Length: 634
Image (cartoon, rainbow, N blue to C red; front, top):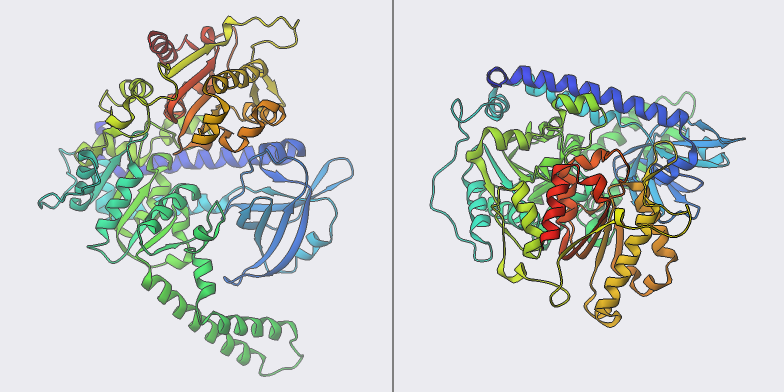
């Protein structure tokens, strides 16, 4: 470790090699998926829409040629993975399921339910797609994100000045370099608790870096919004980023609710008027000069299309129009960026040409523990100090290459900073979500027993004398149905995932019984909401189908959501059921070994947590053994 401490540059070069491995692994996985995976499975995994209907094409306000795409077909319980900024390609199916690709990539501009708007290259290739039969669209390998991350790492490795200073600081420990701070009397915020208040003060005092470590339910977002709001009393504009579009939306929405002028680069995942109203695209369109700009752009297209042979003046006319367009664009941009107090984007999105050459005093990174270090460096290049918020005991970044993960690619900048600079960290210690007993296990295992419950949630429960946590051990059940349903995991498709059908049935049964205890009237009156979680995607889809079919749950449709752990990131429900799926004689539990996922799953519950799993398989692992014993003891 001492050696690594000595040279941040070596460590970053190592990081670059690992990223290269990840890049190769993901590219290879993509190639395999494209060449070998059946179309139905791509559709099932949410990576493709087929068949689709092509809608109208037009130029959007950013002057990109876009086309509307409509998903046909029945599979509405499949969550798809399309969102703003992701690269896609079109294909058509010829004869017997043979997929042929059109040779250009496009980019998702926005998705709303079964309709997607896609930006395509303006070179006449779209016509082929519009004329074809049996067309579909699928996610394409994300070359640009990697390119942006490599560029950022190279810049940081070569950096002098402020960026070089931050690099050296982040890789050193307090004995060599300390994270510096200003000193001034603490400010008080009446609606924050003491640790939240400390966190905001630490952010305001930090010269270099501050870290807000927020365990589940401790009000991390509230604290971060407050810190941004206070920082804006001292700085005219800040940059706010997060790994995913969803996290950017979430924090942007909260800031807008506080009356802050946010300019969102990119489009939101939930397309509604409130969220769209602060996007760059929507604001650009709404600008009074936009109509004039649109007219000039149209004139440019017409001129190009109807170019007459031997027209001497063609180039002059074209140049003159282009100059006017550019001038107007710059004017509109200057105004939009001039008014905004917060510029919000994903980490990779901060490399957008709109932000080229822009500098900010402070960068806030939310959900920092879910981002690869390389991605964090993309926006850090534009700022002089950094505030990270997140929880490295919850979901880690997704990494495809096992070798890269083992060699440390999974170590995030936030984790590194918490280790190297404890002086910059504030742990939020009061949680406002869970019944004490649900929280206690997580607090003991992950947070050194430091988290406590706010008095108003400590004893919250739905039924009197209810036990807040139960574990239904599926190894105790024998179903008298011959061999048909066993409590054993099975594979669906090649690597499409594991499911445990009997456990899924039991999950529905457990919820039905609990609902009967509470009574229909009360569930609907109080709108008690339920999350059903499984780490395995195949199980999630199987559960969704079961819920759809089961008559009993009809009246409660809107109150029940079924999703993977990642799908519940940052959310909470009154009642949570977790179907762990794994059940085998060898005690293999696969990626359930990543306990951070389990931490997220358990801590979504406000008042009741029901775990379904085969104890004989799972309790061979210490964490699950302890959890099982803890629940039994309650």
